[in-house]
Length: 190
Ligand code: IMP
Image 1 (cartoon, protein in one colour):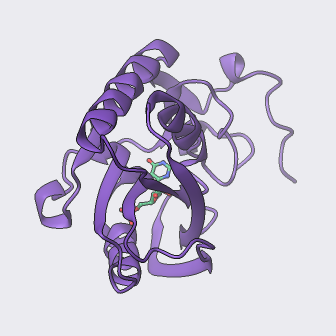
Image 2 (cartoon, rainbow, N blue to C red):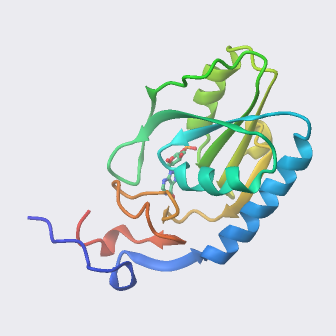
């Protein structure tokens, strides 16, 4: 039988340490928003949020951009309920907006192996957008950002599995206000 979740994130043994504080996230996302505002001046980009991990990032990023942005959502699944990739990416929910002639910015939570991104690029590039760029909150040090064509990155992080600020471990921890390193061995629930 599984144990009930700890009453508070502060006492949760699976939350090993804080990697990025609320303040660090806020500042960097404001910088990214300012950069996008400058780069897309005179245009109305379409922000495509990759669900579910990027939903918190998207809300803060969109509000940091001083342009008339539009929002749409796409959902893919590449991980099961564990911290390991299944190696298979599946489209779970498609976009509703037509991408023809749009300036698309794909908003991702984390670029790890790049498998998800390659899949999304293949799927979106065939839809006639005027441009397609990627803005990821996080990227692993090992990720080939140039090869994957990732133009905007918030933070480069080491190999630890992270949770919070939208990112999950088995669908938990998405509502943490900060980004934390997750210790699966100390998890009393998962
Ligand atoms: P990739 O396809 O290997 O690049 O994996 C990207 C996806 O895996 C992300 O969009 C996340 O949903 C998930 N992922 C990768 N690393 C982590 C992590 O440390 N915490 C939570 N989710 C992760």
